[in-house]
Image (cartoon, rainbow, N blue to C red; front, side, top):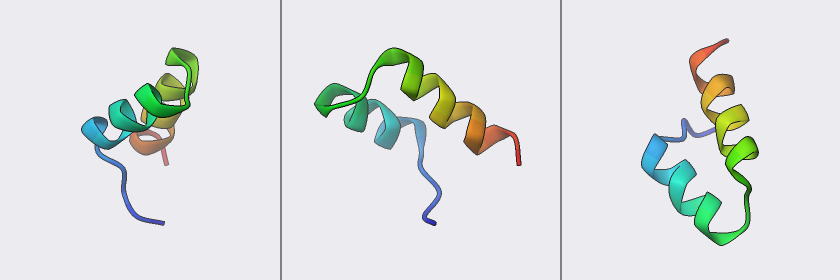
Length: 32
């Protein structure tokens, strides 16, 4: 899976995801 940058996550969030989901994405990226 391609590593998602915060900018990518933020863009995806503006399209279809909630703030909580963005947080979970970021945590999944930071924590193995």
